[in-house]
Image (cartoon, rainbow, N blue to C red):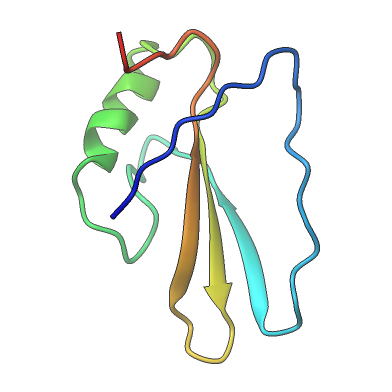
Length: 90
């Protein structure tokens, strides 16, 4: 599995490409009662939820963009959005 990290400065919203009729986009954000998107394993989402909860992230912008195949109901892609100042490489 490959992991890619991209940084965008000065961007307030992400451009969403059009999806075909067989796909649905879900934008998941953490809440006090939900530390991970439904159907995903607890780790590493629990750690990122704790970062969100205790304000390790600069702001509340942490989100997960999930593309679901509407025919099977399965997630076929996910992208994590971390707030500015959240550089995990250093």
